Amino acid sequence: MKLLSTALFAGAAALAFTTSAQAEADGEAVYNQACMACHMTGAAGAPIKGDADAWAPRIEKGMETLYDHSLNGFNAMPAKGGNASLSDEEVKAAVDYMVAESQ
Ligand code: HEC
Image (cartoon, rainbow, N blue to C red):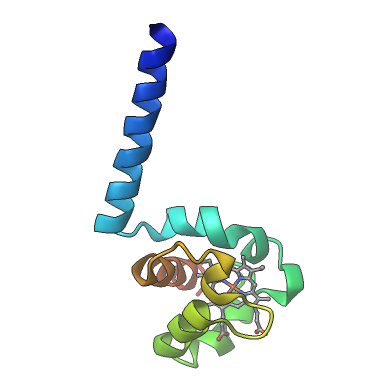
């Protein structure tokens, strides 16, 4: 019985997380889940979060361009970071978060 209630609780927690992620996209959480693998290490030439020199020329292109490249892909940057289940809002929130942390 204890096992069952633990499983139920885990299911409810996962559901609550999904619901809140859709209601209000948490850029930091999306970044940690879907973007960090490349944008923390610089894998494949990804601009590293917090590296203002790497981000400045990208930020100059304008947020609309950065959103577009994040949603649709750009060279080695996969569309939505390769995670097609993310909503557009979640991807944009992650861009906002990375840009805010990198200037
Ligand atoms: C598989 C590795 C990988 C993942 C995962 C990844 N990126 Fe990237 N990203 C890249 C690379 C590589 C570039 C540099 C592309 C270039 O300039 O040629 C890039 C560039 C970008 C840029 C700059 C685009 C521009 O126009 O200069 C943004 C914004 C960005 N990524 C956002 C994200 C977001 C948001 C996520 C998570 C949802 C993410 N990336 C996940 C590899 C990745």
